Length: 108
Image (cartoon, rainbow, N blue to C red; front, side):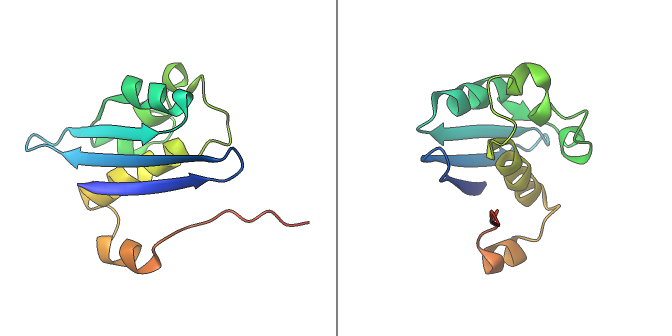
């Protein structure tokens, strides 16, 4: 299981994205959020396959029918990619835990 927390400070929301891989390679996605739109996104997303992790334009994570209620700046889909990459072994868990967090900085 891999969990990623999003502190969406612009909209004052918090999302927890948990991805768990089954024995058959399918990944269950569970999103807990205080944003109704992100919760709906998580409900619609449901599961992922390894094919969803390698091609951003063909991935269910970015499927226009699933992300249509999110703003283009919403970090929830990026968090799903990160949690799924961690869970699948495509990203180093030890490096991710060492780094601990990523950020976006707005510059004047």
